[in-house]
Image (tube, rainbow, N blue to C red; front, top):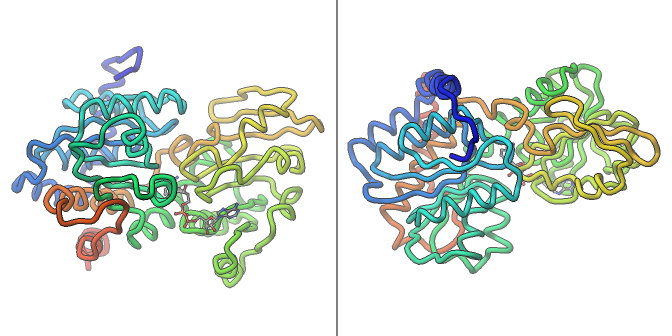
Length: 394
Ligand SMILES: NC(=O)c1ccc[n+]([C@@H]2O[C@H](COP(=O)([O-])OP(=O)(O)OC[C@H]3O[C@@H](n4cnc5c(N)ncnc54)[C@H](O)[C@@H]3O)[C@@H](O)[C@H]2O)c1
């Protein structure tokens, strides 16, 4: 742990957060019993980069029950300090704290890799990329990757360089529907509401990227009474939005109309300083994609005449034309950095996929091919059935 002050109050608060969430992770609780019985991870060390928050703690319990040792860090802006302290208190090696930026994050990643894990559970491919660039992959038998952005990296910049199997959780239709669409959709709006203390009805939102996250965000905003325009470069997806009666436009045509812009593309530099110069005075920027690079923040800082932290989670930038732009949660994922992350039940499903995927890797890594690969069909079927049983009395 690299928090400066670790108080008993924070520890108690972290433990209470876990006490609320653990019983609600019904699928993970079932798997915990199975892992306790079978010990599929006995003698193995897992290096993990997943958001350090209460639902992930549920996954950690399953992995520990299965016999694994775990070293974990989160992503910039998403670590809950009290939860980190509570986890460290259970013998897990936890790195990082809520204040960490990208530089500290990469140092935390190195700290995790210094445990010489045989298994990696990654988010955004930061562990895998750093392992390949700076450490030796000898001894690593496989891993999982949680998200869309990490999957892109594994299949582009890291293609052909990963010498072990990586099961991509985001390739599962279950994860895309239950977490990206329904979870991120709901909690991105929640994060926006919490940070801004504004209302949605009547407000003009531009949702950039109509993939799984974007469609959930657009749908939630509309449910709350927001006016929504979608920007999407893939014509098939743009058509899907249009078929639901959602306005679809080129980004340039939304810039003066939008009051709030929410990105969910998984790509960098989607909103540039040039775009921001054309926005109306008072425009609000929020990001739901994995990396804050969806906004050209250095471009914004370069052109800004003044920059000021107004309140926690809201930074004001004064542009050369005198307009003010407001950036939420420093451009980090608004549902995590500005809220409590995806709902417990949604994450229960995604983390159950993680637990069963890492069990499969531990058992069958020799037979599995190298590099990124989808979640095996039978794991999807099993987790869907467990979720149907636990939530919908099916
Ligand atoms: N905040 C969270 O809790 C959370 C959870 C899951 C995924 N994510 C992240 O959200 C991002 C999106 O994930 P997804 O599953 O929706 O991905 P996706 O691939 O399904 O959707 C992304 C969409 O953005 C579109 N797009 C790309 N560049 C664009 C541009 N310049 N302008 C307009 N549209 C553009 C693509 O065509 C695609 O339709 C990723 O970074 C992912 O890692 C965040």
